[in-house]
Amino acid sequence: MRRTALLLMGWLFAFALVTACPEKREIKPLDKIVLQLKWQHQAQFAGFYLAQELGYYVQENLNVQFLEGGQGIDIAQSVVTGKADFGVAAPEDILIKQSKGLDITAIATIYQRSTVVFVAMEKSGITRPEDFKGKTIAAAGVGGSVRDLEFRLRALMKKNGLDPSVAKLTSYDPDYKDFYNGSVDITPAYLTSGVIKMCKKGCKINLIWPDDYGIHFYSDTLMTTRKMIEQHPDQVARFVRASLMGWLDAVGDPGKAVQITMKYARIQDEALQTAMMEALLPYVHTGEAQIGWMNPETWRHMHDIMLGQGLLTAPLPDLNKAYTMQFLKTVYGATEK
Image (cartoon, rainbow, N blue to C red; front, side):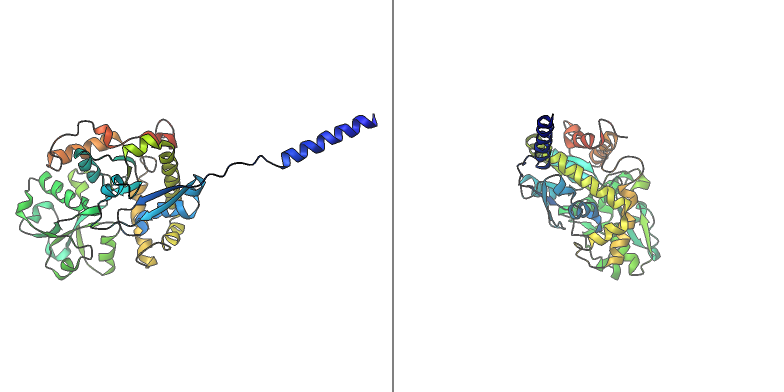
């Protein structure tokens, strides 16, 4: 009896040792990922910063690096040439580059509504597109990551029966110097940045919203190449999942989002970054869909408007190649809830 008890105790001790020493797992190196941003570091990209700083990318076994964008940087080229694995781009740019045969596809839309508006000084009396006739508009020659400003102007004018030639187009200036001194009558701007800066300067302005004239576009859209999707689908899914977790946290705790953004922001003005954050929230989380979700009808609407206004020279042979719901469905389930 005593011998049996001793044997049982031995077995229990051996079992405890085994369970106390878990099997050694092979530690895999983090997958290196480069994200090309649409503009310079600011609250506009807060969700990505949170995904980085809160460890969501590392939890998905990703080592993510951010590249700043700017007026002269072509987001699509950064991605297709391999300089970056993912990019944050305007949907217009994605559709146009698709029409030219570039291997890019949208995988999530961060901004469900465009924040582009056209701004005139209040004293000018300019309040609608018809007032653009004979005026100087700073939207010509817009290149790189802010091309959507010029695209939106041309769509807005043609939607209202106006040829761009009825206005004098001059170069876009992100500092708005000529707009402030009066040599430019109208400038495009983002509600989440440029308009805030104008208001901080005390400018009294009128806003002309493309949405008011039936031009409903997405804004910052996450994209990659079809080659990346085909060769590394798990890596894409992990990146999308971690990024959306970061954006969900940004919406849930804007104060924390601003604090983390300040680690990256080129303009170290917390009040400005806070104002940007407050302005962008309703465009990221509209309450109509999950963060990042894409609607096929919206892509069709954007495509058809761009086609009708001549921004696309011909219909895309297969609009479904411009975007994919594959990874959003992986994150949120088979259907959006």
